[in-house]
Image 1 (cartoon, one colour):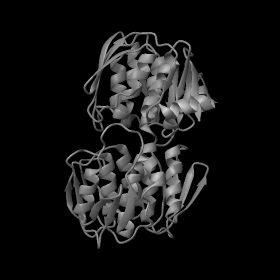
Image 2: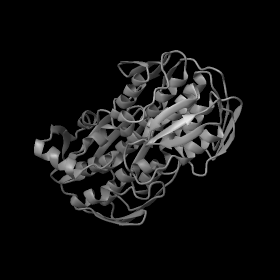
Image 3: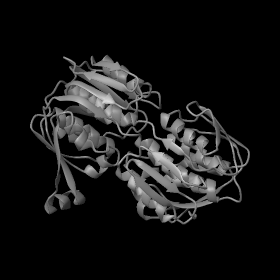
Image 4: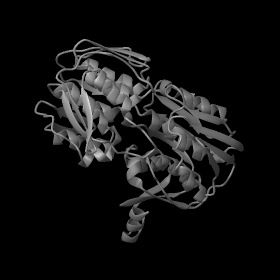
Length: 428
């Protein structure tokens, strides 16, 4: 097991390149199951979630080859092999295998998904969609069993706006008979990305990116090439750490339109932000102003950046309030930030952050992916050395993070944990 060490207070300057979107990749890879010939996905990020999905596709008979940043998936010999345990338990996005396998094979057995624990994240909207399409869904011994004689298009209204449910229903509906209409659909860029891949494979999807998606089912889908969009959450994380410690940081490979809510909040805090076609420039502010932030579904402020920006707000001159309406219990990072001298109080689904304070290096633990990003931001700002355990969480979503941050001047590196440290972490 490894830990991250950061010497705080170093100035960040130069160019940093954003990898392709993690939240797209984990849906695009299962989508390849629906084709009858090889699918090439370009720009696959080097993260542990992708490795887990690669293994799962191979487990059901797929041939998966990685060439540089390209992943070539040959689904021709895949079978609807049950996946009740093992790798699926490590990955929240393994639920996309349900929609993809149901669409192609009309059956699937998938263990209840794992990933970061952020409080209750039920998959009832996914199941509602599958049942509307004609599938029988049962929960047997901790696995979801899906069976259908055939899938038939339906009108499905999502009670809660859900990215996962929107994509999963799309995956099943593209091979259903007739038209499916998803109402109150999520609008995230990753949904457009998945719809683009499916349309390139021969699907007929209209309205992705709006709250009503129409899908006319087709009998077969064929392989194609597809390039993943840039990761807006990784880009937002770099924007936040550039605002914290940068003296002129250029973030490359971005789509600024996907980051409008983040840009607006940073400007409100007094950060100078310039946008280009595929770049964002962040200049270090003289002083940060406090702001109130409420996470919302896209195009609102993303819940995945709530934790990193909470760390930045410890530098703001005054009291900020951050409210997470998506995952109200997503504040496990606060206890760790307090170890570093942050003044933060959690009340219900909100955190009250008083600043400015000087953070101090400490031994802290990443409890989930974005909590880890928050601690990296804090470590870069802190006085002294910060030691972050739970690095496996960070590796789920940030490709080559250490090398990228070193490239703009951060003093950050990995170290192997001692046996005693590893035992303490596992027992805690």
